[in-house]
Length: 474
Image (cartoon, rainbow, N blue to C red):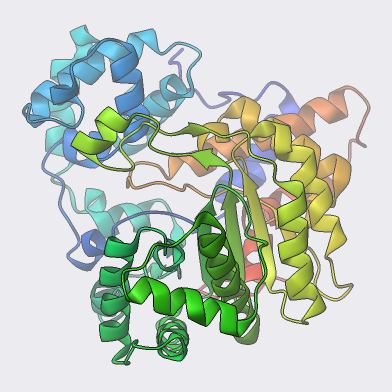
């Protein structure tokens, strides 16, 4: 029997039935990803397995570094094939690491390969995939169609022209590729030199004079409106902690003016300015009916040496142990008190915060919108079997699993859509095990409704997505 078989990770007949009859048939709404829209705009054809699988994947780089692989095979100047061969030498050593499951599942679903990647099998796999990538269903758009991906939300800066999104909208691409508004760069006012350059770019994108604080707020609002016209329905923020150092408009303006003149910005200044912008962002989101996403807790760029040579987002980040509850509560409460708390998804990267996030959601439900505040899926270091089960269990204990919007890829790779399959198998197996232990009723139709909604239906309703040809769910 191949490793990836029909009932992979499904440990009961009920789990198997829930997955194959219900979950596997649901389309994909990937509401948070880092896929490059440029690749969809040109319908990129991938030349080899490195381009589609290893390029930009810091999960794989971390494993290779842990295996003593030289950096030239990760982010360096080694050839694509040599990088792939170096990774092939690492895969057999990833037993019990989620990479082992992910790699096997990806090779199976994208290329029909049952062999485990090893140094012995690497040459044959490289050649087979190279041939398979020439097929139309393995281009960027071909993959989206083949995996029934209805919606992908990319992650975009407010200053982005969204030219690639425009090209996609004008094309025959069946998948909706929608931008997500991520204004994090505007919060980094303490990094005065780079921040000032960014403010100028934002002003140029909005065709707005940003000499004054009023000007930059106007620019932010104009870009928010532009993103909305381009189909954006979500914002996103990646923060160590929520911001909750409240200040007046006059104080925020004074901080802005000081930074624009190149003056020193204190940590307190930065927090006050960031909080003001985050409150304004929440108000804009609520006004447009968007969903706000808060990704909280990572400790980024831990290696100064590697950051100086390779830059950010290259695999040197980890889980932070920052206090989350008080600041998050105060931020959400400020928006709620103001009547401008949008639908919000809370993600934590530290599993010790699971119950904080789960209980925080219940504090700010409005009694009108089912599941208004969501506890987001296992994120980053937690998007593996154990992390997903922890998150699902916490959500189940503290809220209503029935209204949860489910999984996403959070990925830069077109080979990550199997993350949805992986999640759905894990979810169906959890339900099957609950029934086996007598903790849930053996009622297939009730469980099937839950699986259908968590896999697809809840996301469609919550975000308001209605792709062409999609059924309107009750």
